[in-house]
Image (cartoon, chains in turn cyan, blue):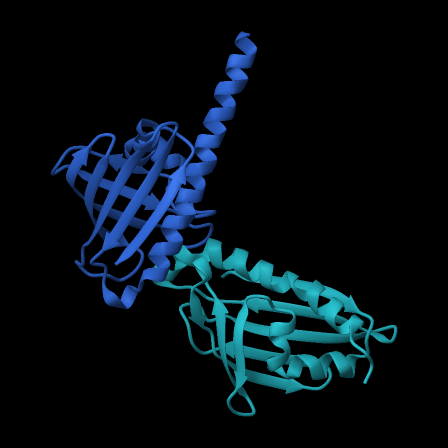
Amino acid sequence: MPEASDSVTIERPRDEVFAFLADAENDPRWRSGVLEMKRQSPTRYRQVVAGPGGRRVDADIEVTEHTPPARLAFRTTAGPVRPIGRYDLAEADGGTELTFSLAVELRGLRRLMAPMVRRTMQNEVRRLTELKRVLENAQPG
Amino acid sequence: MLEITRVVDAPRAQVFRAWTDPDELRRWWGPGEFTCPDAEVDLRPGGRYRLVMQPTAGEPMVVGGTYREVEPPARLVYTWRWESGPPAGEAESLVTVEFRDLGERTEVFLTHSEFPPEHGPAPYAMGWEGGLDKIERLVAQSASTRSAGSGADA
């Protein structure tokens, strides 16, 4: 099962990091592959991401866990590959130790997609460094 | 239908051989970490082939079929049927590969058509792209081995 996970320490309070992540409409600010992210209900978002060759790929998500300020989880409900994801937030000396994990089960023919999916997911979780940059440069407010 | 174009940094006779020689196929067939423990090729119109793709975990995926057109080093047309792996019944799809001469390089133009609609193009696209990545690494290794060899001769 392709999985990817990465962690980063962000010099911002956990409540603030959680609030930013809990509104997925913020995602395009740090996930460069997101072309569109629009809330459709309290727990559902329409998402379009850049696929191979820049092709637009539907990747709608549904929030499956919202536990402030410790954990957020979601599942993907559209598109050819539908990973589940999780953000775990821990206190770290006034800052936040954030872990982003993705996993997807590929069966049958879709097992052929595993190498590319794993690479894509690894790139995705590494974008936490961009999230850190965005949040640490934001004006407190 | 899926179409893929890739320029490989090797003459087309070498790329055609990579695509049709069982020993060469065992070195690259399948995307990423998939290996190819077994490859059988009867390279003639009406001849059959069978290729095993082994993921790091789980059962192998085996594909086989029949060559319809064999025109070395320019063109191959062959049927594609899953023997094990994805449930596909007796469904056959069709692969056409053109190897276009660019001198020291080769443009591979691949068409995969007639696969069951429920399969969708994405698994085939990622499978082929991953395999082509490995062909590129293979020919790069061959080139560096050749240049190392010629260096030793000098």
